[in-house]
Length: 257
Image (cartoon, rainbow, N blue to C red; front, top):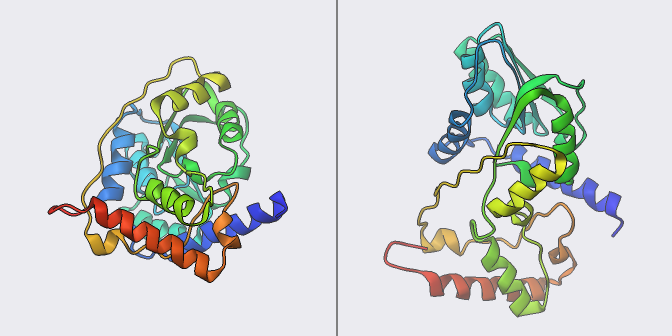
């Protein structure tokens, strides 16, 4: 498939996925986003960019810190997410947040526009991570900070899906978390762009889930560069699902998976 066509389809898939998320805000998302905000010593009057702002968890938290003298710009590809953010912003009585519906891969701002750029757990959805970092570096003031969170290569059920598809149909899937999936990879990417001081903190946000939830993979998969599952027959996909379910069942404990 042509790369441009695949990227267009991928973007549509991501947009539709998040447009269906009408109950996105849960304890996990708040803990993840607010832990990222806590890592950066924000000050009154600063200008903040929140990439993939979603329902505005980071945007709202930072807007309350920088105050009316500051400003927060939140960007997201999902209109549903942004509508949820608008409701929360109005309820909080905040007037220093601007929301922009846009693809984060193609946003553009003047050089040195922001003191801090945040991206909570969404960086891997972008099609060109190195290019995005280069742009963020340009958007930042000289003493600015980029703060993003990402998941490890072993997060969620992704590695098991990859192994199951390889075993069942010799399909090779790429791990969406791989580009940022280790501290070393994050550090290398940041240093190549030009960031002088890199600080990395790892935290455990994992938990057990029920066997029913763990085995409920519907055969969907998302990756910015490729998804070979779309080329499989229904029989082949059924074989991949069966292999996956068997692998998950082998991992089950009395606490769950």
